[in-house]
Image (cartoon, rainbow, N blue to C red; front, side, top):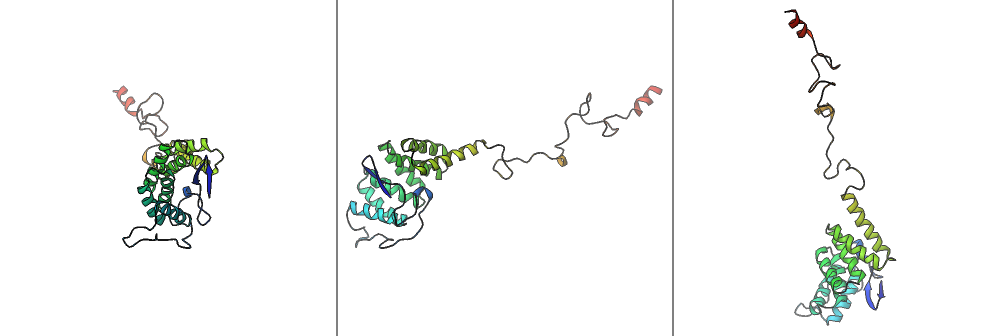
Length: 226
């Protein structure tokens, strides 16, 4: 749905015809009522002007057609590269289409042009998380939460990113079997349970007299009798 914050229109989630927040992945459902491939002119160019491309691209995105929306919104962004609204909506379409690197670049451009744009900071953060850069993700999601602490989806995304960072740092205890980097402990079968030192007062293995640690003194008696 659209909302206005400080006079700037933004879209926090899918429209009434689409799925939820773009951060949850591609919205469910297909096109309806004119969705799909954008209308084109004879030369393969989309018909209409920049505003029409933007309007139709936003409608396609809300209907669950991010790839088709991206075509129109990319055309609009090329014609109006300084429009934050167009670039932000293009970034949403790219994210929903799975083009996370392209989405990050457009969210980043909007956030750098207007650092107080909480939605652009949020988009930057979730795109970075999808690309595996959780340090950058945490930084920008924290900024978004600080700007709009009442936004539940901002806080949820930040919690998830911080949990991933904590898990990577080993904050949840030792690695479990099957986890990357896990090493099997030494077993008794491969000598792992044997101490490198013998009984007190000796070094190395125990004597030949057996496991009780007493050495065979037969040779000593033979040498004393000679």
